[in-house]
Amino acid sequence: MCGIVAYIGNQEAYPIILKGLQRLEYRGYDSAGVALLDQKLTIYKKKGKVAELEGSLIGKNLHAKSGIGHTRWATHGEPSDRNAHPHRSPSGKLAMVHNGIIENFAPIKKELQNKGYVFQSDTDTEVLLYFIEDIYHNDATSLEEAVRIALKRIIGAYVIILLDEAHPDTLIAARKGSPLVIGIGKNEHFLASDASPIIEYTKEVVYINDYEMAIVKPDELILKNPGNERITPFITKLDMELAAIEKGGYEHFMLKEIFEQPTAVFDCLRGRLDAKAGTIRMGGIDKHLELLKEAKRIILVGCGTSWHAGLLAEYVFEELCRVPVEVEYASEFRYRNPVINPGDVIIAISQSGETADTLVALENAKNQGAFIFGVVNVVGSSIARLSQAGAYTHAGPEIGVASTKAFTAQITVLYLIAIKLGYAKGCLSRDRYLHLIGELALVPDKISEVLKSAPAVAALAEKYKDARDFLFLGRGYNFPIALEGALKLKEISYIHAEGYPAAEMKHGPIALVEDSLPVVFVATKDSYHDKLISNAQEIKARKGSVIAVISENDTVFQDIADETIAVPAADEILAPLLSVVPLQLLAYYTGLAKGLDVDKPRNLAKSVTVE
Ligand code: G6P
Image (cartoon, rainbow, N blue to C red; front, top):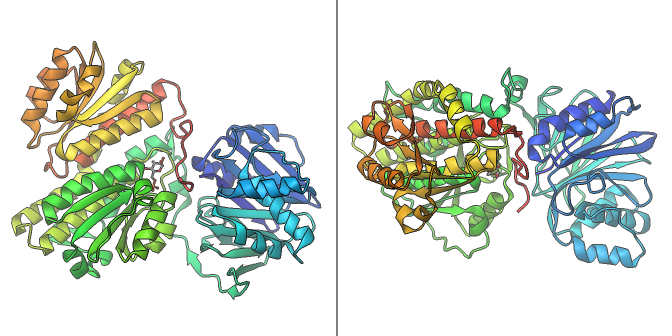
């Protein structure tokens, strides 16, 4: 949450920072700002999206060789020019951007107010900046030392970057709990919340770890630990192409990413699944196969869409591996006092690998002796690094705030693990095993088939866009998909939507059904199909409108439903990889029909680095 970017070198800083902010806008877009240093420090900030800031700066002289920028997801204080970052210190000489939350900002603010400081904003960030400057002026010999002293007192999560008018050749950055990557150019450095603003200029990056501080000059990167000792930066090569973070002719990233799903699933299977040879090879599993086979329990941890992937995996692991499974919202798990026993394996699911709740939940579990296996998309992210083993989802960068291809790639990895483990444990016959991997190999082509329904789904969206509420129902493997369909619709179209196990309808939600309430059934052919038909009849009897995602040639459901979208037949375990796609399209086209910004839905952010 919040995107930060900074530059120091020989090029003009502003265009680099502006482009970086546009790339990081998925992290928050309530307001944006830049601080530029050309002898004097100038700060520009504006409520609204990065484009508003850009518009307000047209015609200004923005010449500077160093600068910092920020795009905000508001925590402390409403979105406004005043609360936008960068903030300026009381002397006017320092500027700072921050991503994260300073939990103990209130007592520090009080102390500073007692000393006579007057704050200009409602943010926790400004408190930390004033605190740093107070130490800088009174108790430290350098800004670097002042930052180090100040951070010792801070509780919370942060990445901060400071610009000091007195030292135009140096940026100071520090991290705890929020991400920071530094790109190394020729006599220049790029700092950002993720690699997307950097990739265009250099592929050599250093991921900064918690509690590290970076003193960054055009030609030098000094890394220090909290004990003020120098550490050698570990340079990694980025494995990402610029095209992957551009829209490539699509109107929105979300649409592009929905349409990338055949490739995302294919890339996820590539090199792992060999249907002809009948093998699944996954380094992270092969290395720890005995430990996983012996697991007494699997606990899946995630948030949002990733939690839905976990819920589906519960059904799949129980069925294929006969192991007890629990699925946990990371935000609940971290604050409970969960019983973790030897033999428990935690599977962490996260697209970004930076979600604060998931990260802390894992740290806690790891400290209690659990083995952490990461299913993560972003290479080198905090969760990937914390995991003791893992499997990347290889979905490629996902930029639309609502997760789509990352979800299908997550569940693909989870299927691979479950099939491999189930077979290794002897829970799956060779025939069933070969059948499942053969079916999995067909999924990319089948998703391409499903995508052909896009125009029909767009027409449906147009028809139902003014509905006040939507219900999404499914059973078994399609129940998590119903939840995901409801989440997508509310995220993108702001229509109130609920997902339910279909049979639970009669225990409450059926009271909501009235004339033409749209009820979406995720009804591909499976063992629950007959039951679901009855559930759909119950909706029709109360005059609801039934929209159904069905398997091709399902004439029974076609007769009951007002609208159907057919997907190719598939094994019932794998059907969610297909049935979710029309629901993603429905959310996308409904948002579009309502004239909303589908890539940047209100109040949301993609990488939730605050709890
Ligand atoms: C945010 C995003 C969701 C995502 C969730 C978990 O809420 O908007 O799309 O599912 O965070 O994120 P993660 O990166 O851990 O999968």
